Image 1 (cartoon, rainbow, N blue to C red):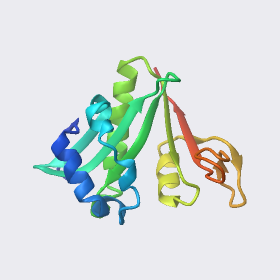
Image 2 (image 1 turned 45 degrees about the vertical axis):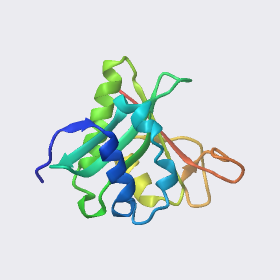
Image 3 (image 1 turned 120 degrees about the vertical axis):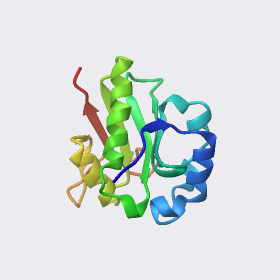
Length: 159
């Protein structure tokens, strides 16, 4: 697949992403997580891969204010292009940016029922924190509120 370079996400890219949210996620269930602050306040860690003007994939991340780590908030790839390495390419780009800033740890979270996300992050070499639930998946209990258990991933980056 021929795609362009990884670029910082523009406001126009952001508007396209939220307009086409179902093409990326299969529904609009993640729309509320797509806050414009990721472009306006954390724009140096929000990336897209385009083909011409069409956003094919994106990653919204930021650098933690509490710990010396990078955090991936969302990574989205249009459904018809998934499993072509675009998400992995965005992660590698974000990791390179983190290393340039002297940050050598990465974090991401997902829900225990999101098997595709768990599989994707595990293939990236990320480690699940927490304790095993009844399905054998490591979770951090109440991470997002009472009864809102999450799979918390971390990855130590090589210097």
